[in-house]
Length: 152
Figure 1 (cartoon, rainbow, N blue to C red):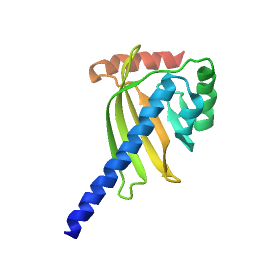
Figure 2: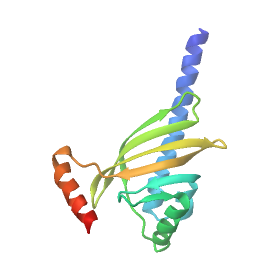
Figure 3: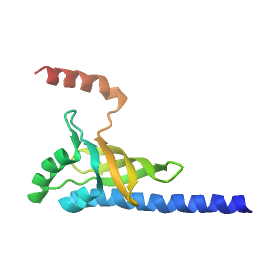
């Protein structure tokens, strides 16, 4: 009986943490779409890293804030609408990693991946990686274009 109770409690805590993490990620996309910079960056840990779609876009939180807040201050955000999301938790429920599919009206389907950690009892984004998945059939041609672009 005690084993069943432990299993039930573990599943219950796991589901509750996933709801909290989903809320953080949903808010991330919402605040970006309405250009609410302060709320957006409060979701990130102070040592967070953000990877954008360009190969040069590996930003610590301060660098990312410098870029994004300039846009947000002009009312210019970005909109990625979640399509699906998978969340995984470590055994002590203090670290989570995720992958999600996102839709962007201008560019199409993106993938976001990342890590969150509980900091003082609050889930914070430690790393976020936004990428544009490329079908394998197109990868050779795109990689040639990228190599040529980087030569110039």
